[in-house]
Length: 263
Image 1 (cartoon, helix red, strand yellow):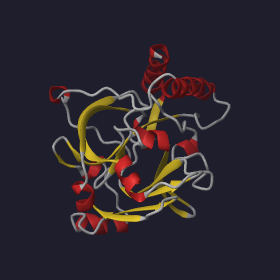
Image 2 (tube, helix red, strand yellow):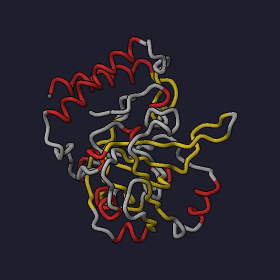
Image 3 (cartoon, one colour):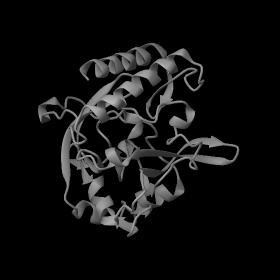
Image 4 (cartoon, one colour):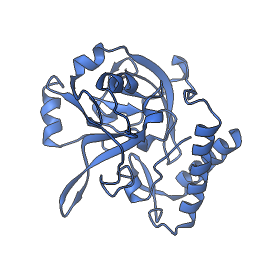
């Protein structure tokens, strides 16, 4: 297990230090990686398969990512991806200090939900000091506070057959001929129900800042930063993500990155 993780981390450092050029969810996109024949992509896919097999086959499903002490927080959390959304629906909530915000929970659930930020913060909270690892190679330690995603899903009542949780986001990350393309991401129910997977509304003892994803962002601590969707608008429980985006499970996955970004 340790060998697989070390190999993965070394690969990430090499790709980040040598090939980073454009922003990938705040990290650098690797030129040509979206080409299915790219040799680096094949290498990353092998490392990805080993990591997923190790995490899912050798470790307890509830095994925790490393947590740190307050003294380990030595710099502000570096924001990734979009840092100042200009989408009208987002700005409406921002200008109202998120009093009008509602998290919609729908899809394969018995009880669809519409939760205000106040309602979310009234649920049992979890705080954790963890390291955010970017595919570019940089890392940052911060304290995150929020409601466990499992708590929200249990309240909604996930129906049999559901497999994934889809996060719809406010932020437009790309403009295309057909209009704005908004960020989205998916994780499976194994990671969704993990005790460290939270919907964070706080960071380092204060409300989550806008550059870091206010009012609500995902923290899924056993995966890379691009999996941790920011500016979450809605959650949809689904049995497949093939009909969303380009069918690979996330904005960057649609452009060549791996769906499972375990570390």
